[in-house]
Length: 130
Image 1 (cartoon, rainbow, N blue to C red):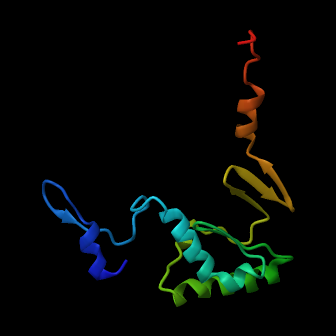
Image 2 (cartoon, helix red, strand yellow):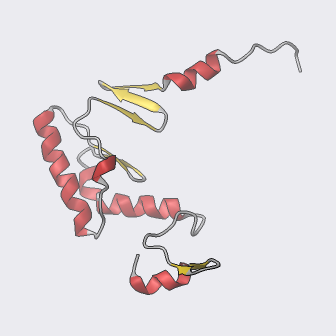
């Protein structure tokens, strides 16, 4: 967030005035779509190569480990060109199985989390027409 813009979305408490260092979600109703459009712009060349972006999640499909490392290298270089940072503590690298948005992706197959399907399987049968 630009230094000059911080004052416009600051907030006051009983003991101080605070300013956001990063744009908070919810600032405007369509901020998620604006963020997604920006991310798609930043990674546009990589999207053409099969990199999948959803909000702040980046999926780098690859044929083998060497291909994965090459693609990862390009993905890691791109954010810094736009002043963005990646939180390496949240990164999972060279995984054959990932969990994303309630699904498990493994070996080219997508399946829902087990706990999501258990709730449906254990749902009681209706006892009346109503």
